[in-house]
Structure formats: structure tokens, C-alpha cells
Length: 315
Image 1 (spheres, rainbow, N blue to C red):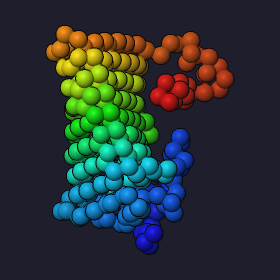
Image 2 (cartoon, rainbow, N blue to C red):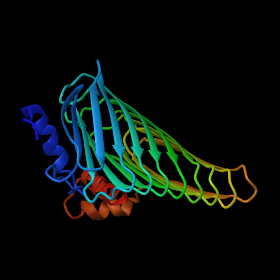
Image 3 (tube, rainbow, N blue to C red):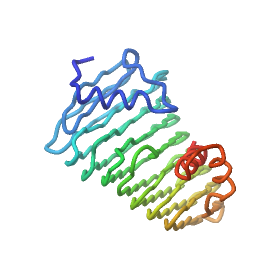
């Protein structure tokens, strides 16, 4: 690994200590480390090709996983910035070859950000029979007024599987606007999307997940878990379009509100083919007072009790 600056060492230390993510070994796997608009370092292994270019306000990355490659270690992507103000725009294009298996582990770390834009525009192509998972975890500072704008377009071919897991529970969200658009074009293709977000103070959370099941016997699950407290607001729109025979999909949304928070959920199911089946469920509720009181009786403050309950909900 190249010599890492002191500021980026802080970012890596936070990423490495994130609860639940212990697959952190740059000696074994492929990786790309991005600080602001600088490519700090990247490493390729057999079957994994990475190209990264610096732009005026971010980085453009091309990642290609060869056909048939079966990766044991995740490909680690770390995007960070220690500035309070600024912008980072990431453009990424990922191609996964036929029959390949790869897990991506992405950390987006902004420990001091206040007025800051982090935007990501990405495309992913999942080859025939390929298995792809992408776990993205954000860490923001306590005073964050960040704007986070991830936009992703995905194509899943025959027998392919794409799993996306987005988590933002550490620090203050700021303003989050997720936009994922997936076309499961191949027969028997599968999609799973999960979002877990904890909004506080005046945070704004918007999640839009759209999946079109174009392939025969394709399937999709969209699941979101959002907790909002104080004066935060949240909006979820998840849509699955069953557009092929045997297509099956389910949208599952749960939002928990506390204090003066406001939440709305709009699960949308569409069957544009008569042999498709798409279902949904949505729930908006609050944390039971007796659960909070029980933890406060053990010495926790109200905020500490809520945070402990939320950590369980968002696991």
C-alpha cells in the first residue's frame, strides 16, 4: 500500500472500526481509496481490474470483474474527506462478468463535514449467472449538514443476483436522497435492496427504489428500515413492476417516528404482465414508551434509551 497521509489514516481508522464490518484486510483483496478528488491508492488482484481518474471535484472509477472469478475477500472501496466544506462527486461504472461472484464493501466517511456535497453516479451490469453484493456504510460527523445524492442504475442478466445494502446510522444524516433504478432483464434474475437510516434533528431522508422485473421468473425484494426523531422528515417510495411471466416481487417498508418527526411511505406495486405477482406492506409507528421507561430505569437517559432501541431495529 502507498504511504497514506495522516488525514486519510483517520478515515481508514473509522472505516476499519465500524461495527459489523470486520472484513478489512488490504493485504489480500482489491481496493480503491479516494480522498476528496485524489486517488490515494488502489490495488488489483487476478480477475479484478480497476481504473481511477481524478476529476476537478471527485473521481471517475471503472471496475471490471472477469468472467468466472470467485472472490473470497470483498473489494473494498473507501471514499472520504476530512474537510468541513466542499464537494466530492464520484462517477463509477462496474461490470461483473458471467458466473463471477464478488462482494463490494464501501465506506463513505466524512467525520468533520458540515456544508458538504457527496454525490455518486453509478452503473452496474451483472453478467449471466453472476452474484454481486454491494454494502455501503456512511459515517457522518455530529454537526453534519451534508447533501448525499447516490444515483445508481443496474442491469441484471439471466440468472444473475444483485444485492444492495445501504446504511447511514452513525452521525447526523443531513440531507439524503437515494435513487436506485434496476432492470432485472434476465430470466431467473434476482434483486434485493435494503436501506437502513437513522434521521435526527432536522435531517431529511428520501429513498426511491425502483425495480422492473423484465425477465421471466425474475424476483425482487425491497426493504427499508427508517427511524426518525426530533424534527427530521422522511419519505420512502419503493416500486416493483412485474413485467414478465412468473415475476414475483415484494416491498416491505417500516418507519419509526419519535418526537416531532414526520414520515410517509409509498410502496407501489405494478403488474404489467398478467402472470406476475407483486405484494407490499408498510408500517409507520413509534417506539413504545414502556420500552424507553424500562431502559431509563436502568440508568440511561431518554436519548440513550432511544439510541439503544434504534440500534436493535437497524441491525
